[in-house]
Length: 301
Ligand SMILES: NC(=O)c1ccc[n+]([C@@H]2O[C@H](COP(=O)([O-])OP(=O)(O)OC[C@H]3O[C@@H](n4cnc5c(N)ncnc54)[C@H](O)[C@@H]3O)[C@@H](O)[C@H]2O)c1
Image 1: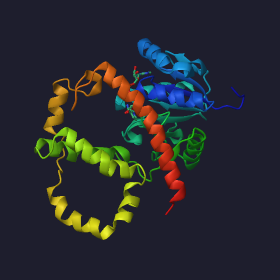
Image 2: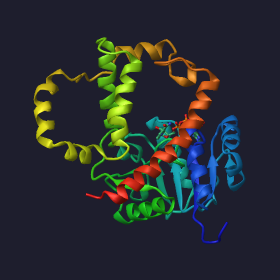
Image 3: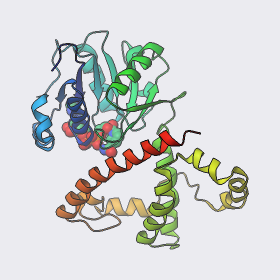
Image 4: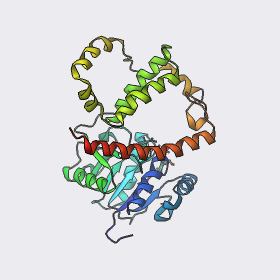
C-alpha cells in the first residue's frame, strides 16, 4: 500500500458494504469495514476472497481513525442512518468527507442533526459496487461545491462514473426510473396481460439490450421524438399511475416470496441456482460494460 493512498472507512458490511470495500481494496485504497454484527463481518470477509487480505474489519468505529472519507452503507432506515452518521461525526476529523450510500432517502433528512452537514453528500453506488460504473452523486442543501468536487475526483480514481444531481429528490434518478418501470410491470401481471417469463423476455431482449448501449434519451433521439410523442398521447391515459405498491407485491412479500434469497419470488430458486446465476451475472456484467464503453467511444453524439 502506498503512503499517499486514500484512507477510507465503510460502515455496514452487508451486500453493498462488502463490494464497496472490495472495490477500494482493488484500487489501492486503505479501507476498514465496520459492522456491529460479527457474523456479517465474517461473511463479508469470506465473500471477498483474496481481496480480504487488504481490508481491515472492525466491530465499531474508533476515535482516532483519520480516514479521508467514510461511506455509510447501513440498513435503509433514516433513524438508523442518523444514529450512525452521529457516531461517525464524533469519530473522525472535521475535514473527513462523509458519504451515504442510501438508495434514495433525501440527503437533508439524513443530515438533519449533523454538526457539519457541509461535508456530507449522497454517493449512491449500484450492486455490485465493485463492478457497476455509475454512482449518483447527490448534494444536500448544505454540501459545499468543493466537497462535491473532491468526492467526484475520488470516485473517478476508483474507476467510477460519478453523475451529479442538481436537486435531491426521493429515490434520486435510478430508483425513480426502476420503480416506474416495475409499477407498470406489476400492473401488467395483475391485469393478466402477460406471464412473468414472457414479460422478462420482451423487456430484456428489446429495451434491455438497447439500453445497455444507449441511455433512454439518446435512444429516443435515435428513434424519433415525434413518434414518441404520438405514442405518449394515446398511451399515457392507460398506464398505471397508482400511488401505492401493487397488491401483488404486498401479497408476495407477506407470503415470504422475497425473491432468490427466500427460494421464491416470481420464479423458484435453489441456493445452487441463485449462486450460479449471481456468479455468471458478475462475469457477464463486466463484458456488457466493456462493450458499452467501446460503443460510447465510437459513437459520441
Ligand atoms: N442492496 C442493493 O442492491 C443496494 C444498492 C444500492 C444502495 N443500497 C443501499 O446501501 C445500504 C446498505 O444496503 P445493503 O443491501 O448492503 O444492506 P444489508 O442489510 O445487506 O447491510 C446493512 C448492514 O448494516 C449493518 N448495520 C446496521 N446498523 C449498523 C450500525 N449501527 N453500525 C454498523 N453497521 C450497522 C447491518 O449489520 C448490516 O450488515 C442501504 O442504504 C441500501 O439502500 C443497496
